[in-house]
Image 1: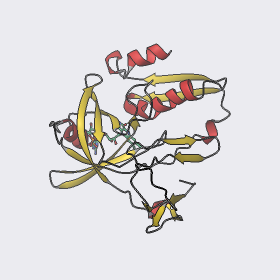
Image 2: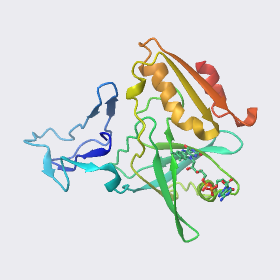
Image 3: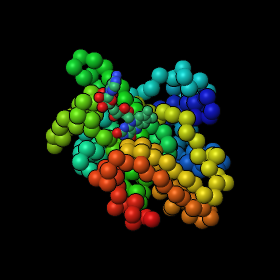
Length: 235
Ligand SMILES: Cc1cc2nc3c(=O)[nH]c(=O)nc-3n(C[C@H](O)[C@H](O)[C@H](O)COP(=O)(O)OP(=O)(O)OC[C@H]3O[C@@H](n4cnc5c(N)ncnc54)[C@H](O)[C@@H]3O)c2cc1C
């Protein structure tokens, strides 16, 4: 993503690559590094065959979200009304969601196609972000159409129930935070989700920068505080 534009790399690679594809973003210079590791020892003379729109800039609003089939592999309770849904994407799919961006989940609920945005979190506040599954922390509203639907999905050994997952969306940029020396984060309820990865970034990757991070986290009651133990440990 470059402002209002998105840059498309669309190739049929010359050979097979390993499934684990680390993606690193250097937010200070706007560089994205995608590391592909060849499976065989063969020599490639080029990267492969260019496909539709390869090496082009497309206006972001003209690019419809691309959905892939996610399988629900676990549901973990965070508190009395919030769960973490772990969603596995099809083999070979790498869905790197930059910090502060969200994905759309889409499903057919009572014959209506419903779409809701959710912001992926890491497995924990101190987890390494290299996991290829998506972790979504979702508050289940008893009368909320989509969140109730999600909480009723089954984790069957193989395969679990499915939900469609879009690519990353949103416009949040880390760039303005570069020179910030005191980062104040304000969140309420599941509004914590975009903050979680910012907190780990601020406390781990940017620890060499002299920076203070303060989270103001608003909740109805103590029992609603998400990841309270983890936040206390970091404080
Ligand atoms: C960018 C973004 C990221 C998000 N990330 C997350 C996340 O990480 N985790 C998370 O849990 N949520 C997140 N959300 C919120 C999420 O997208 C859904 O809005 C939420 O899950 C509720 O959806 P639902 O279908 O269950 O509820 P809905 O059916 O949409 O209802 C939600 C609540 O509003 C009430 N309501 C619905 N319609 C009306 C109405 N007309 N008048 C009055 N009350 C009404 C319902 O009774 C219910 O209590 C995010 C939202 C945005 C915009």
